[in-house]
Image (cartoon, rainbow, N blue to C red; front, side, top):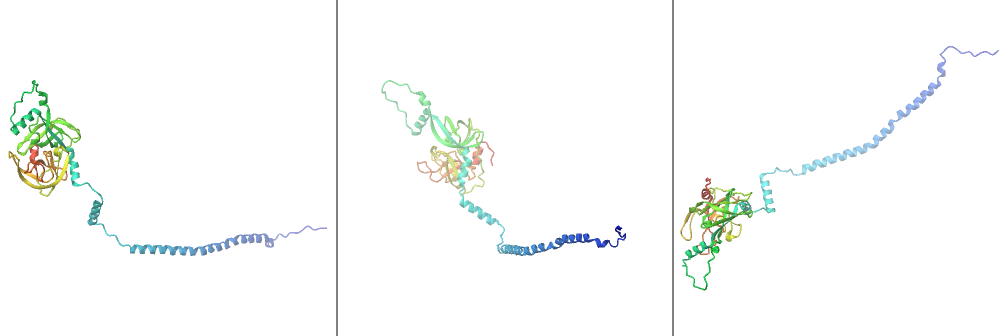
Length: 336
């Protein structure tokens, strides 16, 4: 009779049947073994990169040392002084061509310069020429049938003389010399832009040979000259005369103030003027009535006469101008 197998109810013998656990722990040990052995390659990488870090540090330190050495050897820049600035400005002025003082003065006064022409009728001119030369009128000889005189020809206007004027008020008020317009039947002025207009005498100052004109029409952009007191004017100061010498112009000529408070007597001895500005800028017939200006282009006088003991009536280095204070009073303007 076959017996059934007997199984013990005790559990003390179960530990003997735990080989699977052993294998599991072995597998865990095997799994953990790589984890414990993993740091070996990391240590290997650190050991490989340490020379690179070392050389990088060396190079960085070397660069810092070189930079500090160069900074220490570089000369220290001193602060810029006013002397340095002046030297730089002078050097720039030497290397770059700048407009001259006379060019600046001319540019400032040019818009205010006016050409003044006086016209007279031929009949009047013939009378004045006959009187001036003392030539008696002779009776014409009979040469045939009588011819009616051409009265229209006698009424024709001819140019008596050319002078210069300067605009002192932008409404068309012009200063010039009295001898430029005296005795004229008609006065014609020409402005900078070419506009021509008739003008009338509104004031005179015979003792200073001055006349004030009013133009019948003016340019839209007419500019009046700036007048300057002669109180600080001194011999040796640069001046410029602007006008129409012999009808050519406007022409500019430069010079200096030769003297102040000069007296001048006309060649005919009819008039003596005092308190004049003497200058050596070239002036000739046609400059009369034009401005004498400073290097700022400001008017200090009105050119009125030149001294030449010969009959040539050309410039020999001595010119005279009426101070602008006198000229302004002729126009009814307040003194400076």
